[in-house]
Length: 137
Image (cartoon, rainbow, N blue to C red):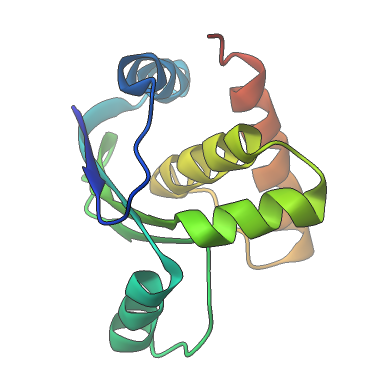
């Protein structure tokens, strides 16, 4: 089950379709969707979490707290809408594409994908693109 929470003026217009998409990505990888909470917020909110929990005094687009157990995906994914807007401009993509990429990025972390090394980043991007390719509205 996916829950969407809003700590900013932003709100998704297509929650059910996104939940169905995420469930498909998870099941295609032979994982099971447990409880995932998306919390959409602003830079200030996410920076506070970044400092408090990760000791990083920098802006970021996403922080995910993984509570998965084996193949059962559970966790909280915090997304800064301001960072997503900025990144979309920087990467010359639509806001929606960047938002969907970030949303699935957190889920892929829960399934064991990392993005610290160059090789890990390349694999993460490949898996993000694969997931985005099956998203239909």
